[in-house]
Length: 180
Image 1 (cartoon, rainbow, N blue to C red):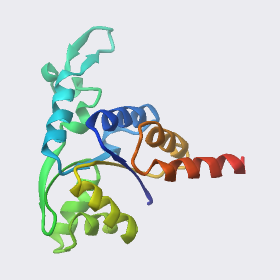
Image 2 (cartoon, rainbow, N blue to C red):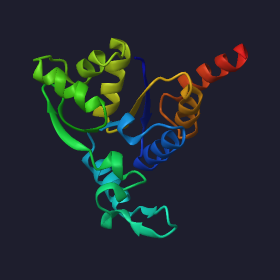
Image 3 (cartoon, rainbow, N blue to C red):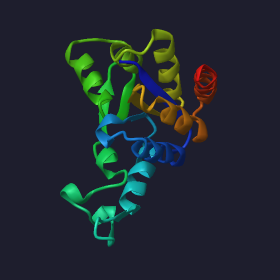
């Protein structure tokens, strides 16, 4: 399945994108996040800890105090962030389905760093190398599987939240609008 990947300079833009994707119908476990920047990782985690979560009964609590199924907002995704060591790429911090692809590639003895894991996940080699370069520069990648029913919402979210590859999403949205 094709991956839709956005590249974000700041944790704020990444968090806004994650929230937009959730509103578009993506469950936290369908959203992958990858970064090599520990400062941005810590900022993402701190933001999760400071999030105010509204309960179904209308009351609210801080995410840092939430436990088990009560965690909402970004917590379900970002609490799963973990450090991985990839040969040839060094440490990365990842969450979501991409972690399975990365760890599977490592267990199978595959090499090639993050780019190799992305290629194994269905990303073209040229794009995978570009994404790895962005990771090495400290950017944050957000990945979701392409879905015909949510594609336009993903394109819109990546574009509005200033994905560094947003021109790709503007062009594709415009092309699909011309078809309608």
